[in-house]
Length: 305
Image (cartoon, rainbow, N blue to C red; front, top):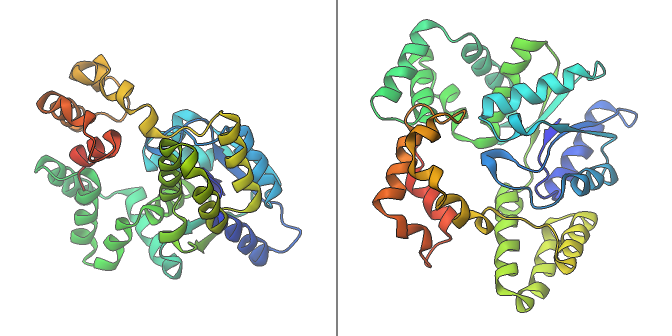
């Protein structure tokens, strides 16, 4: 399976247990893990070596690194890079992934098959949606519903983990077929890695008064080895990087004021560079606002659906 473990929480541990329940106790579990940076370009909370060691202690048998070029890319490239890495080992026989829709495994594969081959009419509908001002995700969802006349297929593309599930299935169609396991997510609202990272960042911002409550909170959602690694890094003053820690340096860098430079970055095409530079130029003081963390506010301002 592919993972970020940023950080490793109880939902991840449950997934590893479910894999063994499905494939047997003797099955080897190989994890393709993001390195120093994860999806959306955020820095990993803990060093990749620490996260790999936690995965091994919690039930994985081998951990490989997913190249950063894929780890920070779109869902499609993320999935394709991970699948190619796993297939290159020559030992992988199944691919497991978490999804908000584990009971719709067949629908996930059906959506993937359509999108992988992208009939001309579907591709044109997606382009028309983007041209009209829709974000790519919304345009693809609308186009898929229009093309298939099946709202349930398009609705799968509203959930972040299921979007990745569809991309894994697409990658397997293109690179080599493997049986897949669609695993349920474990209390996503309570164990979301993003929520956990934000909780840790707030505690760091508060200083010593916030550390004791943090330990209590982490014990509820992280495995003991993962919670210990977080607290050890925190007390030792190393690691525990959060996107808000680098937000000002990133958002106020000259590159964000130069659309031509942004256009040269992979993935910036389709109007994204224009939205970024426009947001900074129109309200550069917004990234210094105190009501909301600057990175979170900036992403909220420029994001489309």
